Image 1: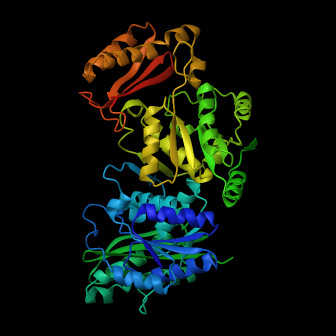
Image 2 (image 1 turned 45 degrees about the vertical axis):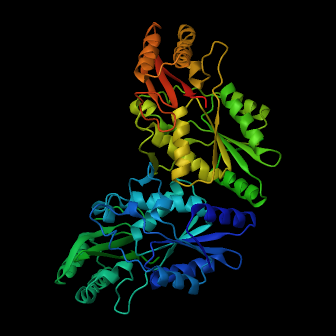
Amino acid sequence: MIEFQQIDELQQWVQQEAAAGRSRILVPTMGGLHQGHLSLMDIAKKRAGEEGEVVVSLFVNPTQFGPGEDLAAYPKTLDQDRQGCEESGVDVLFVPEAGVMYAKDASLKVTEVKLSSGLCGRTRPVHFDGVCTIVSKLFNLIQPQAAVFGEKDFQQLAIIRRLVRDLNYPIEIIGGPIVREDDGLAMSTRNLNLSSDHRQEAVVLRQALLEAGKMLGDGERNAEHIQAHVEKRLMESPSAIPNYVEVVHPDTLQVLDEVTDALLVAVAVFFGSTRLIDNLCWREEK
Amino acid sequence: MIEFQQIDELQQWVQQEAAAGRSRILVPTMGGLHQGHLSLMDIAKKRAGEEGEVVVSLFVNPTQFGPGEDLAAYPKTLDQDRQGCEESGVDVLFVPEAGVMYAKDASLKVTEVKLSSGLCGRTRPVHFDGVCTIVSKLFNLIQPQAAVFGEKDFQQLAIIRRLVRDLNYPIEIIGGPIVREDDGLAMSTRNLNLSSDHRQEAVVLRQALLEAGKMLGDGERNAEHIQAHVEKRLMESPSAIPNYVEVVHPDTLQVLDEVTDALLVAVAVFFGSTRLIDNLCWREEK
């Protein structure tokens, strides 16, 4: 595995790979790698095939954290991450410092103005500008043929698909399914920041979503009923402070009244200062 | 010369050229081609050399015109443009419709927040967002090794250089010198919209800037004096309505009090509803 910290080294390598006709599959991460990330690397490895190379970026992007958010507390596990990538057969690890990625007088940003208004965007107003900007930068630097993002960050995935469409990136976006702990909690770097009590309680996100799935299976089509039930279920957990519970269409992220062909139930919950997200995406069988 | 109107045709061609190891040099235009544009194509042709291909895009980008601006009145001379490109040895002409470039629910934009605040950005608040967005789209579609922009749109050129730096595009940006009519008027597509009286008067932009140059040559270093003289000189022309006269640093576009190593005098002037721009960039000889 090659490791780059500098942009010019990375660019030189990319140029050389492109000239040799080899493709690159990108997995952007903020480090703190867990099984969820490793599953994205497996997907990338398969997509890359014999000839292609898997590139993992590992960068805690400051511009996607708002003031008062957990930038400083975001877990850093570089040695472990490096080993995980190595074992997953990653070809290139890109680990830049913030000063390498952003000039002091940087003045460009990439903004999404529709899909990012609800869900996480409502309480994290600068978050998706930061995500769109860093992902554009990584796309321009690495020029991948495909990039893999996890479905836990469902809104992020939808916004990245829109970014690729609207800015005409010739890049295939692949979503990787949520990977869960044995008790159903969605894997997340932020799980490391939970107290043991909160860790136990946190399974309530999954339980509430599974109950929403059961309601749908039983024929419930009123979005408000589903939303209310999930919210109530979360509130039963003594430490859970729901940040949002939304029922939206998974393609447009528009709030639904009546469920027709598909829906996404998305939740964000605080346990202390740690904010967890999870979602359930349901589509009518045809 | 190949002509593409559709994105997928263009992308297929780009992919094929990239696989063959041939480079592309891009000249983005809004059509209404004049000698200024053709000089940019000459620069592109030289930069492309034997192996590379010159790509000209011809697209009157609606998102860079604000409400009440001259989008509808912008001259369209497609047959002539096509001929000019052919004669200049352009390899590929990309002429998309607006509906091809922008989805109806397009929601991504690329924004510059520092260099675009003064000069043209002050009176055209959405202009440079539109420019940055369309240029990013063209960069992603065409993946050029270099792109050529005219120095008449000095602020645009500075913003594009910043775009490339801050979003990490591996693209060389080349500025092409202003090309002028015999009487000194900077060539512009919008000159076609001037009445014959206004066309005669319009030479005042160049005259005022030349006088600023003379003041600098004579040792004047007070930016306000230069600014005031240019403004006064423009006002002497009966139909000229100055939109702005600014003296800024050519690299930062920050307003200067005292001239040190370099300055840009930039002017925008209305004649009727037609707005013309010109500039003089001066650097201390070392």
